[in-house]
Image (tube, rainbow, N blue to C red; front, side, top):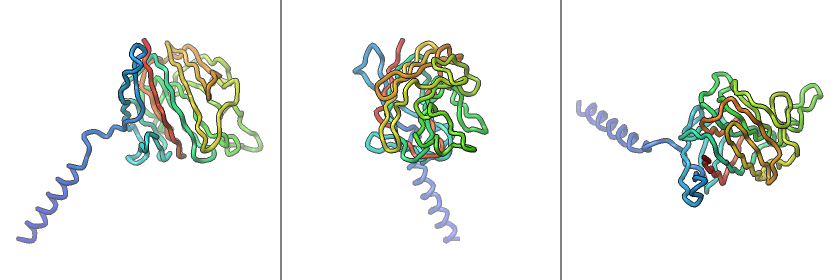
Length: 232
């Protein structure tokens, strides 16, 4: 009986110690947000894991690192409507796939594991080569910042490639190199600047408010200097 009592006490201690190690919340803090009327008053952005693993995302020296696995997203703590988003990103693997969903409900599709919204695509340049089928090479526009509605969201593309909008210039850099996106989202219109020049856009989005979702889709990606400015 004494041994049983000692075992029970040990289990209780282990349980309490483990419980004490759980943080008050599991939010990831990454990036800043400010208002267009108070640009110098920045606060931290919090992100909520939607359907990825506990170790999918981590922040090291200000850089958000995603392992790429499993496929899924984490979302902003709050929803946004009109804003300017700045983010720098780089893929660490050839053909890497990722992106940011804006105006999303953050409710992933059971099959694709990705949500609705308008996706701002982030692809590594080698994606085209790796996805060549039967000698047919995908359009190079795939890897230079496409914009498109997902999950039933419709848009009017500025530079149509089917229902998607393609960049008018090929400005993205390859594996290991930092790219800069500046994204202006106002009243259903999105304009995308790639590495310092506006090259793409959509209009008349059928969904104009929602969460921001950072995507992980099979390969390691890094993001840094994420800044959000809310607009009226």
